[in-house]
Image 1 (cartoon, rainbow, N blue to C red):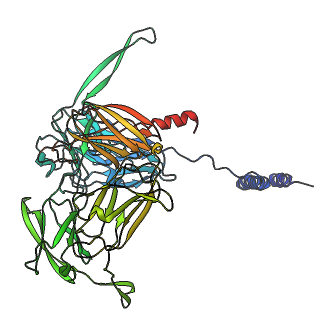
Image 2: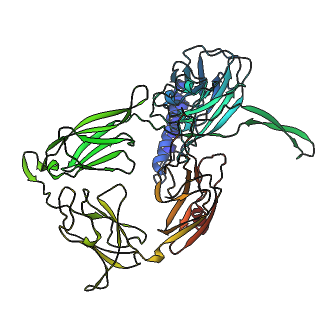
Length: 631
């Protein structure tokens, strides 16, 4: 029996015997045979699938560039890059950086394997331009991004090559800030940063690094900017900024080196640029354009007023109820941007509608402080809509209030203070009305003595001062109607049973300090690999006289140490101010992660040095140990 291949060969042989058959027919038939053989073999070997080969992971390669990188005397009106494959301009209109900056935005288009940037204006004579494409070009098929593409050319007969490079870091966390506009001016006047386009621009990459490498000899003022409105200068308070304290004069020096590796002396070298790695710290200025964001009457005796920023001055008055005295208690949120106004007058609290005159400091159009008063209507509906506004309306039960606390049923931390909290300010909170007991067994309990202190800034939160024993059961209770709010509402009964943690569950850090630059705060922060959000676990005051600080009763976890120099001694970290030429308060990080383990005491030495700031790099040595052990 003839095979398929044999039949094809016979067919071709018959065709060849016909001398009148044209050569074109033979070529067509031969091509058809080849395709048939390929398809036959593919179908016959069904156990082995066709392979597409490895995925292309190579970014596009530049074949030609107009102008060529390093070209002088260029007077063209467009930049044309041709690649070895078809490309896509991925958001290039936003990522392209041409420095010195153009007055108008260039037109960008792709044509097959080329990217064309049309320059809409005459270039500055005798000036070196840099064109940074960032990550704006990728191949058409696989999307491989071409990173770091940058060309230099000159409109004059020389190529300027002085450099200023460095990092943009967040002033509070020292983390790199990518995609920040970095600008250079040849004026030592901060007003130009707020009104004029810069002489040169660059943009920070993912590591926060920026580079100007096309600079002529001159003196420069360096700034950083999150350019929200894309106008290349600082024009609105929501933009974060950075600035150098003084002018920068770039320079270069050729370093000659003698190579003797081949037995013959040969001289080579390299150019070293100065200054090296200039770091600027990005911050957002504190603005005083204060206004009320929202307001509501949460309960009959509680009004919430939220501001856009921390309140520096606040007073509230009744507008239509004249003559009431001591009608309210004020409580501020932790960051002082929300004010709780508690109505402690019982008759006033029963009034459905009240008007409040809120007085606070704001700024006028010239930036000057002035007193401002807003009148707010506070309405309280005494019915709660449970299912539908038209039915199932039920009156609010305000006969009693409920206490809450920070207690948990088991493993309550030994060093944690017990906090009792009422929804409204209290009139007669006395320790004699609180029962605190150690539970010996199901039928026996022992009364424990304790102190009672109000939490600063609040008349509704109280703290029990007591030393808790490890691995012990306790009972905290308050009888019903034992305590009243200032508006006369009594409490519902309260009872909470809880047990404490074992003492050997905790670890501790004993830190020896040296070189503290001033008075400030030492913070113990829960370690996070990204580090962009900081959860403060503990804080302690530290100054130049401080030698040792101990953090005890720590849960097994990874921690980071941070110190900030509280220059204005207000107890918190403060941002910078451009007009006053103030940088943000200095921040320092301990260079490694501290891994706290149960029943373990860790001793560390930290010399806090004022040295050039670099991107935050905190080493987690436990990961190295895990790699060694194969985990």
